[in-house]
Length: 82
View 1 (cartoon, rainbow, N blue to C red):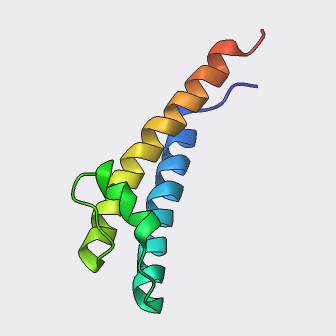
View 2 (view 1 turned 120 degrees about the vertical axis):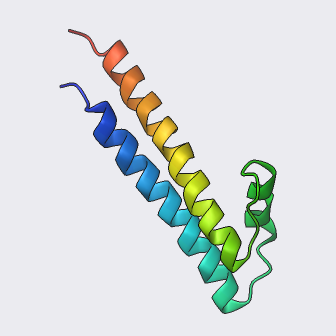
């Protein structure tokens, strides 16, 4: 059974983007310092553990998950025995 590349890419993108967004808000609401999550700022340009940074993380996470999901589905379909 082959995977649908677009569907898996979209689901990975939405999941990863929303996860970064919610985790950033969680840290801000409960007052944690977020030092571990702040390291994403070195990979995702413009990201920081702030209210505005959560939106940037959502966008970067979506793009990152989209590419990762497409790559997983493509490689799975490529190496699937026929």
